[in-house]
Length: 174
Image (tube, rainbow, N blue to C red; front, side):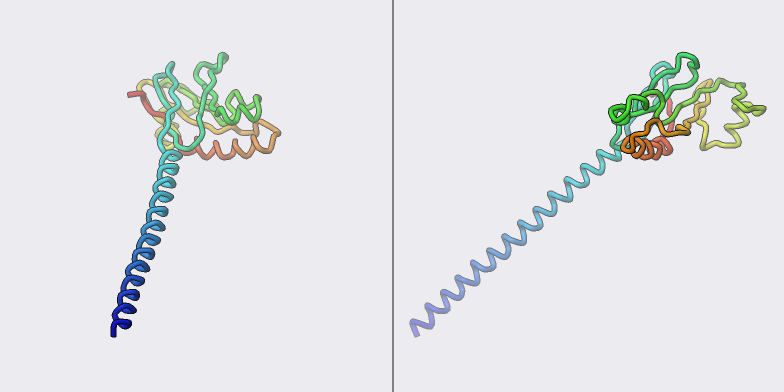
C-alpha cells in the first residue's frame, strides 16, 4: 500500500510539472506572436502614415503616404510648376532629379491652361478630382509622361512612385 501511495505522489507531481511546462510553452508562443503582430502593425502604420511635401513658396503641401521621401524642384522658366521626385530615385539616377515622378502645376483664377479654350474654373468644375482649389489658385498633380532613366531599378521605383502621387492631394498649410 505504501508503494501505491508513493507511485500516486510521483504521478501527481509529474502531472503538475507537465502542466506547468505545457502552460509555459503556450504562454511563450502566445507572447512571441503578440510581439511579431505588434512589430508588423508598427511597420505598417509607419509606411502608411501621412507625410507632407511642403512647398513653402506657394503655402501648400502635398499629402501622401508610403515609405518614400518626396522632394521637389522649382522650374526657373515657369514658376507655376514644381517637379516632384524622391531622394531614393535620385540616388539611382541623377537624371530623375527634375520632376522624375511628376509635377504640380498652379493656375491663377481666370487662367486658360493649354490647349484651351476652357478657363481653369471650367476645367475644375468638369474634373473636380483632378484640381484642388486653394485661395486664388487651382492645383493639379501630373505624373511624368516618360521614364526618367534607362536603369531598370530606377524605372521600377518610378512606377511605384507614380502610385504614390496618384493618391496624393495638395492642401493648404495650416
